[in-house]
Image (cartoon, rainbow, N blue to C red):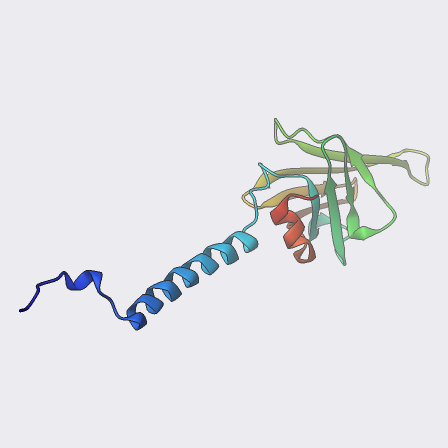
Length: 155
């Protein structure tokens, strides 16, 4: 006597292992994408951001090295070329306004203002740095070495 059965319910062990492998590969792809994905800067501005200034006009622009922007809930700093000059400000996440400044005195005892303005664009910050002698722009990204901390939100 022959019995008619649904062949789709009886798969070979090889077919089952292929399906399991496909599911595992899909899961690993999703995890890898999440680990490499950066949160939009507007949603998660806190932490370190780095980039290099590019001169738009003027002279004496700090364009030869990496600059650093650090944002915390109640304070922020911008350090051109990671040097000794530190521009300070108070971030406004609600308005997406990030402003830092430092006013020094020049050789003639006149104010020498240094200003940095930035706003989030995707997973970066776009900024402008200015002094009486220089105007430069910058795109700031999260440092590569902090990708796990950025993913886990441990800034």
